[in-house]
Length: 304
Image (cartoon, rainbow, N blue to C red):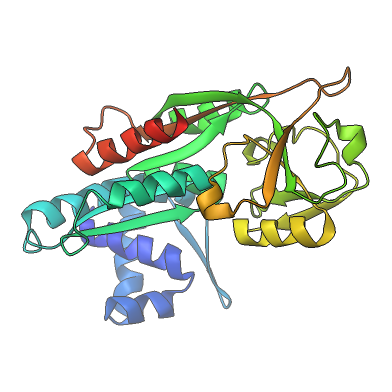
């Protein structure tokens, strides 16, 4: 088994096609097919199922590729630091759920470094992708939350990815809405009061489970739901159709604007209050880079 074979397999998985992968790798399709065949014979598993429509990844292949990504990402990091590209820009990336405070801390962190010599990335993405990005070394730090509802499930994913969670802050659920919303002047809001308004939920993809939701209290059933993929869309929907979302209430007015407010969620017997423990994930036993430490400190400064 070679790094080149791992690279080939990862490219096929990304492109979903032998033809497209061969084009990206600048090799012939027969050579690529032979390389994967040798890899499958050596590992004793079938990684890809071939058909006229392309390739699909088998269950065994998914597990193999998960481990392959970790190994190949480590190789790329070594190559970048010690290989021919050692004079290239240093890189840092963070993946997070849709938190404006995570973006604000990122902005503050970037100000510490000259972007002429550093390359940065921030990815607001799905919960499962936050975990995968850090597990596969695509991002050094991930930001997400744990609650009584999702804790066991998320902790299992973290364990499988050899990741650890470090808490930053614990907060109670808040209702986030536009300042002119009919409920905006309430001192607290119950789910019953919200039943006539659309609830905004960030889409989690085909692998979606309630445990992966970014919003708190997702174990409840909402009659009116709109799925979205970015914060800007949420803000527009809050303003135009009195939609709302359930969140931590830690909002950056500088990024989201001052026209939106967070009102405490009021628990009842059927819907007890929920607490969010927000924190960051990293690879276990990893020595964090100076940039990562700076970012985490900026998170702590903001949340303080």
